Image (cartoon, rainbow, N blue to C red; front, side, top):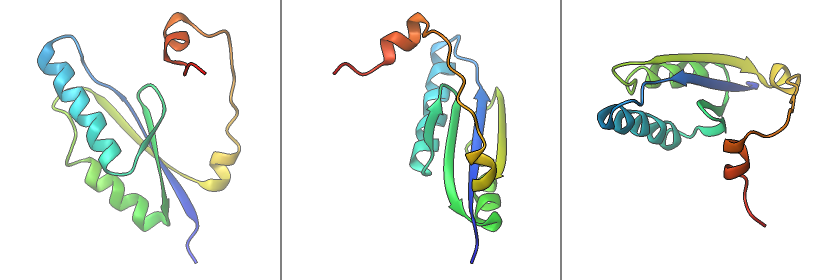
Length: 102
């Protein structure tokens, strides 16, 4: 039985021009179509079963890269992911605006 793995994608892509924003949005939408979800701004994650599947996901990512920018992928085990610590400070203005209203 293969263990669950996490594929993290972290990126900085230019968004200065209308064309750059369009390409950045297309990249983010393609991540969502491939089963990723947003952990935080510019950090997306997908859960897969096994290292072979994780490597396959990274290979598919290479086909949808925007022409400019800095994209990194990281494959970690579920056990490694469980050791992540969430460190919180005060919310900035952008975070306040993105919080859901109840």
